[in-house]
Length: 420
Ligand code: UDP
Image 1 (cartoon, rainbow, N blue to C red):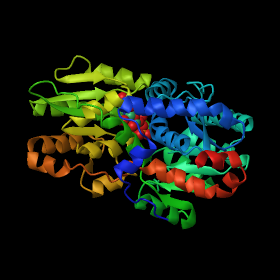
Image 2 (image 1 turned 90 degrees about the vertical axis):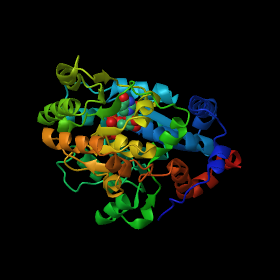
Image 3 (image 1 turned 135 degrees about the vertical axis):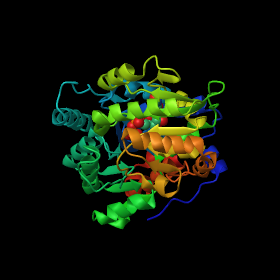
Image 4 (image 1 turned 120 degrees about the vertical axis):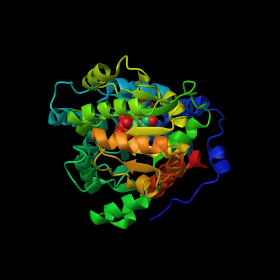
């Protein structure tokens, strides 16, 4: 089913009548808090939202806001805290106070141990809150553990950003495995694009459960970015903004990329490289060891979400292995060089606004220098197109959830009253 029709701006503003980005988030979440106690009494449909990492918070905040705005639903935010610092930083930016905050897994635990911890915490949280639906996003441990814990309690699961695939369980690891598991268990699959919906069909998911909505990350860009001024570049320099954090790039690849960045700096005299460092301590150590104090290289971050979008807006090129950044930069007409061997977000590459450049020093250097020395080529990529959505995915998701729970809503008169 395809529900990805463009939505007029005035219709969205009618539902969310708030003007500046800060106000938008605060007002939406404040309204949710005022209602939450009464709603918790079981008069509405309870939707547990599970998030433990920065991208999950960015991409589920607008879903929570749309659920709260519909009045028929009680969103219950459950924070699992795998990326404790980034998670909390982004929750604060979005004005979200989690309804339940679970202890983070220990840093020293194995991947399986962390997963088991998160799943145990979520099983307990679902037992406590008895949600009618569990919403998970993307492909993290909390996504798969949330879906499995809900499934075990026979609670239906909705998967936001469903259907991303490389069809290689080793890349990205463990994300490809986690999202395949959720693809088997979910009741509602919210695919960001037609390509993602086709992937689900290849995996045997029936089309009646798949909805092409756009990516909710683009909703967050739309709700936040309009009020953010592009951060001015250092006078006389063009900015390349870089992020790198994915597990497959932690070792050899990281050194190759960092060396490639220094090559670019040496070869193009008017560029400045701004490396937005992740919170991961091991990554930070290596980034600082190689880039700190280098001429025309700055290390910043992790930045709050609006403060991250500001320099993205005014960069000439973004180089990143981040899924979210691959989706966001094209919205601002900023070309993306994808620092990975493969990507599950080929839509941007196909649209000509991103290039897959791998993680080898030479290939990175060649791809960046090409764009920085051939402005016509760069301009061809610098088109503000958004292959991943129009910024109204969350409303579509809530419409589908409302239709799916029509019978339950009908049996809870208070919910209908609120909806009217
Ligand atoms: N982001 C942020 N601050 C930063 C770097 C990134 O808020 O310093 C945001 C970015 O805008 C995007 C999200 O974090 O929405 C991407 O998260 P990340 O790269 O950690 O994960 P991925 O998208 O690769 O799963």
